[in-house]
Length: 469
Figure (spheres, one colour):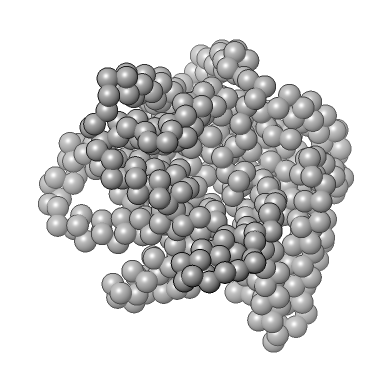
């Protein structure tokens, strides 16, 4: 079950009615635990075994650390081994076997090894990171282990953010499930608006441009202009798709009295790589910072230590996204950008960097680097990626130029709503606060969004991109 299916609308309507009909927090949490299990196990009930296996392991490890603080390191090792072992098996075992077979073939050695066809459970990368942060924070003394299993399991399995994040921290989310929740009209209103905007981005933008992008990347030898316009299309698609999921998740959670972290902060207006990662998939990038970058040395040492930590964190970040060398290359690419940008920017005079023209140029340049990175991310076959990068970006037949121009027009049309929304939030929304026009304009926008979603909705709508991670 996904957020943009008709079944989910009925599912959430029932959940919402029952939830606010329960006066006690504990009963609300029991309902959330049950409906989260139904939501996650809707198609493949066996996914629940992995989810609750990870949850029970970390819950017991947390209690073990609390009862035996002198041996808390052992409990942390158990937690890490179970979670990373589970993630490694389901996500990377076939990748490892394939690379072993390829290496042995290159050496002229025969092997009877073959891939196992392991099925990747949806959301496993997200909830394993979330539960690991729970035990790591207890180990660090930043969080107290919880004894109430119900509150804990709702934190782990909360259905709006279970499948594709945000990756929440226990210190932020658990207290919300441990506190009483009351219905607030403003939370319902803003949550509904946020969820509807997320659905619009998924249905009307991401799913509209996705078929065009897919056609470019299944071509045997696409022309250079098509490759780069396709990369631009994917740049628009992935933001609309992933931020659309997050907006729906945040909106649904807010309507239930729970506030999730803002996961996207207009990443395509970033002025440098570090700024980009402060805006893109914020919950994940801060997780990587706190649990990988800083432990690897972070900025505590000199330049060499910083580069080592940056490359270590970003390479693992790339591999987290999928079992493909192009994802690792994508991580290395962003590590290079982060490492190179800092010393280069220091050489640019402040008068240029702080000027309006300099700011616009910085955004445009960073956006171009981002599009290049998404080309690496989108093309999962290394040999095809090399072919794309070696193709003349300005060479194409007349028909291919027409196709590239048509796709560019689609890109522009799909980018307009997000640009309009950004301008509206910056220029109009602050002026409407407290105005009698605020609510009529909002409800009118809801009606327009609902009509657009109805018109653009297709029965063959694609899954959210980050479901595969």
